[in-house]
Image 1 (cartoon, rainbow, N blue to C red):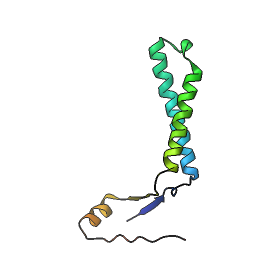
Image 2 (image 1 turned 135 degrees about the horizontal axis):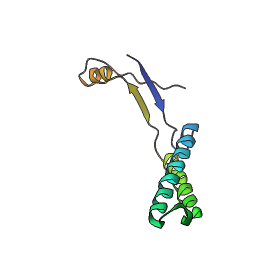
Image 3 (image 1 turned 180 degrees about the vertical axis):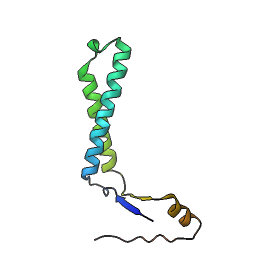
Amino acid sequence: MLTSNISTSSFGKLNLRDFIRSLAMTVAASVVSTIYAALQSGGFAAINWSHVGEVAASAGLGYLITNLLSKSKIIVNADKETVQAVKEGEAVVNVSSRQ
């Protein structure tokens, strides 16, 4: 029964994980935007690269703002047996704060 808890950043704060995920969103938005622009224009030569950069920056900034204004969450990674035991009332979940 291995479990690991991941706490997201609290309201009004950002942590390193938020910035890493924002960077991933920026890269993903750049790739999707570039592919879409290439399909629309018939090739990579006619792509408006400044527009691709604007889309990527907007996606990354939007992700950071969303996380900044979101409530803190706790994500629990547990095996299926543990989750099923909790659902059936055979196991108990204890929550404590680390301060």
